[in-house]
Image (tube, rainbow, N blue to C red; front, side, top):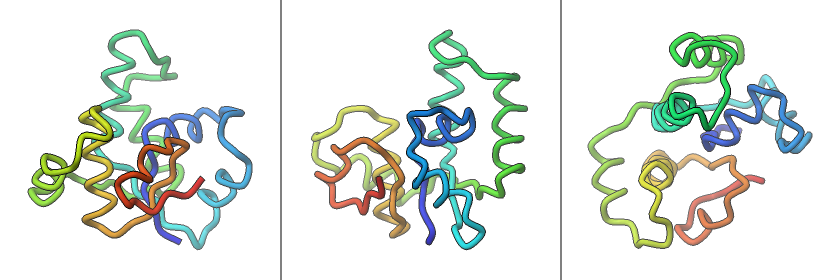
Length: 128
C-alpha cells in the first residue's frame, strides 16, 4: 500500500500517541507500505510548534528530518497541479492546509491516512 499521512497522523505516529490506532500504526510500519509526508503537513506542524500549540522534542528542522529518515517516509512537494486543484475544490473544508493535502491525494491518486471524515466529501480514498 502507498499513502499520504495527514498532519495529525504524522505527529501521532512520530510521538507514539495512543490516539493512533494500532492497526494504522502497523500499516505505516509495514515494510510493504510506502508512506508520503507532504511538505504541507510539516509546514502546518512547524507553525503550530512555533505558536506553542504543539510540542516537538527538537527544533522542526531536526525533528521532521529525523522522523522522515528514521521511518523511510518520502517527502511530497507541492506542485502547480496541487495548488490549482486546491483552489477549485468545493468549500466543504476551509482549512487551507487540509485543502492542499486533499488536492495532493486526488492529483497523486494516493489514499489518505486520516481520522478526519470531512475528506470523504471530496472523494478522497481515506484509510482509518
